[in-house]
Length: 192
Image 1 (tube, rainbow, N blue to C red):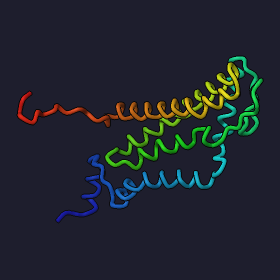
Image 2: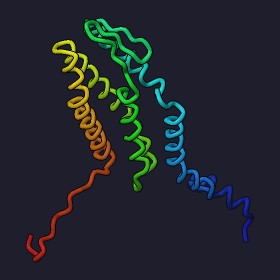
Image 3: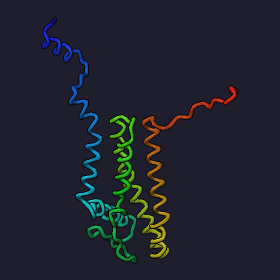
Image 4: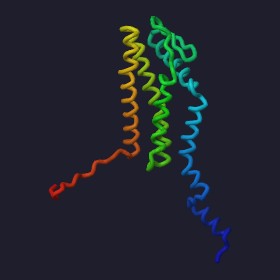
C-alpha cells in the first residue's frame, strides 16, 4: 500500500476535481438557501417591499422628465403633471413578478446550477418590462383620462407584463437548451 498523503497530493496536482461529501451537500442545498433567503426578504420587507417601489418611482420620474413630462418622485409616490398622485405599490413595482420568475426556476428539477443562476440575469428584464407598463399607463392617463389609465393599468397592462414574463421564460429556456424539442411522431401503424 502506498502512502495516503502522497495519493492525496497526486490527485490534487493532477487537476482532478474532487468534491467532499460536505461540498456535495452544499451544492444540492444552495438553491434552497437562495429560495429561503428570498422568502426571508419577502417576509421581512412586507408590506412595502422597500426599496423596490421607491426605485420604481425614481426611475419613472427620470424617464418622464427626459421625455418632457414633469414628474417628481416622493418615496413610493409619483407626482406627474396633470394627473393625481400615483401610488407605486409593491405589486406595481414588479416585486411579485420578479419573485415568481426565479422561484419557479429554482424549484423545478433538472436545471443545472449555472442555468438557475442565469435566470437571475432576467430580473432586470422583468423590471424593465414593468417600468414600460407603468410608462404606458401614465401616457394613457395623460392623453385620455384618469379612468382610462386605471382601466389600462388593471387590465391590458397586467396582460402585457405577464406576456413579457412568459416571453422572458421562453427566451431563458431557448438560450440554455431547456426548450422542449419536438420528437418525430411515430405513426401508430408504422407509416412515416
